[in-house]
Image (tube, rainbow, N blue to C red; front, side, top):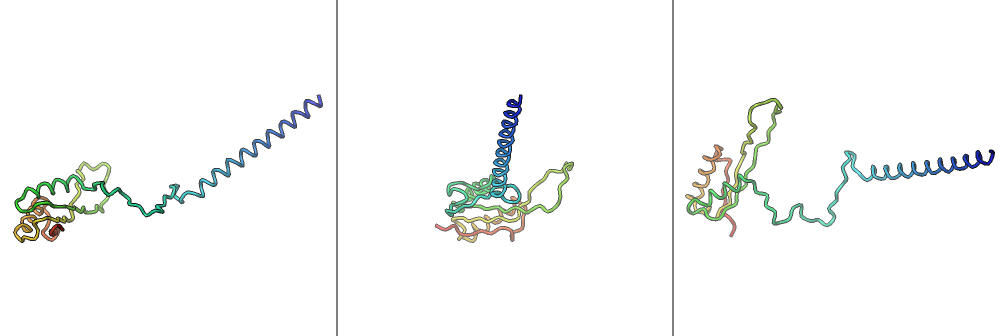
Length: 147
């Protein structure tokens, strides 16, 4: 009987030692993961090679910019053009229960067009943009597109 108790105690000691080793290993692995993350829990990504954030061929144009560019290119004399629209930041708090549609407001438009060196074409572009979006003339900038 003493042999059985003695072997059980020896096995129990092995079990506890194994349990302690597993617990310490788990704590080490978890703590090393915590130290490699930022305080908010997100892993830090570092760009060491100085690469581009987006590939060069990725288009960041919005649908509205594409629509405006297409419309402007159909005006006689405008030619090839590029459009950039800036949107006004909304500062007001919107209620979840609000039934009003949330409409983004245009702050300004920049147009670079081939025909912008001609003052008549430049004025036509400005008037087209101001009438479409209902923004003041001071919110529209038109420049000659670099050849």
